[in-house]
Length: 354
Image (cartoon, one colour):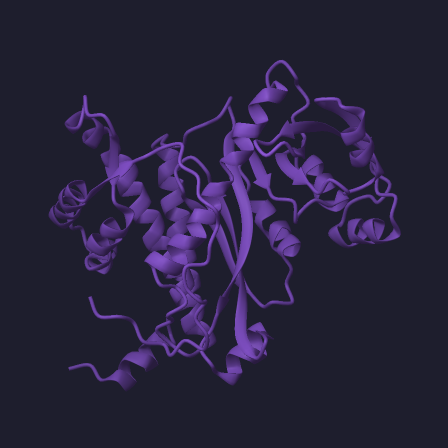
């Protein structure tokens, strides 16, 4: 029988990067089999960040930082909107900002991609980096972002193409720190979107071709960014990420990246089963899909075996069980964002029984 002490000693030898490497291999296989979905020839990605409370250990506060007296880490992910796959993820100290994380995600962007950002990310240095790397983006801008945006809003125009420059000294400093020319001029496209409540929002994109990408398609496209918000909910609630299984920095990183791998595998299986489910439920009023929570429950008990052994029968059994655990898809619903329970504080490192 393996003792708890022996298990902990062995666990310390497991580099968390193993799970990152496995996820990279998984994403490569998805690419090889041509399973990616595109929007007008582009893969739609999203970047967003969150935070997570950590176990009450001094080592956590020292490494990751703390907020209101509780150890906390910053999370950031590069997310594939169409299939929910996390392409690249980070768990870093609080001193690393969301924009810094976005910079680290850039090298993992596919060539044929369009990345969605919320209004916390815009900055000239980021515009310049995308232009430098010949990648495309769509961002929501604060209505008071700069004089150009204010003038565009007051003009009543639906869209306009303008040159953006770094006028503010701080913006020029950020450009220098990011390795881009502070004097760079970037041609970008402003798009007005009228919301249901009568307010206007402004989107900024590097997609300048008005025929290939008319202004009216961007409101629905930007709305797809909400999937990354749901993804963090999966991590924290379904996968109980903040209920860490260890009290060391290494254990926290292991849990985070292992959860991303488990989530990606479950979503891939869900995606592969969808044609079978649609055929089975053809003619029904509602569309059905694999219940993600039940899918993860079926998968996690056999994940290690599937990773280390050739286990075709085991995989077939998992897929068969997942195909029986379905939930209805009810589109068009919208709810106010609410916190249903208080965030965990000082997690004790115990996983719930199954």
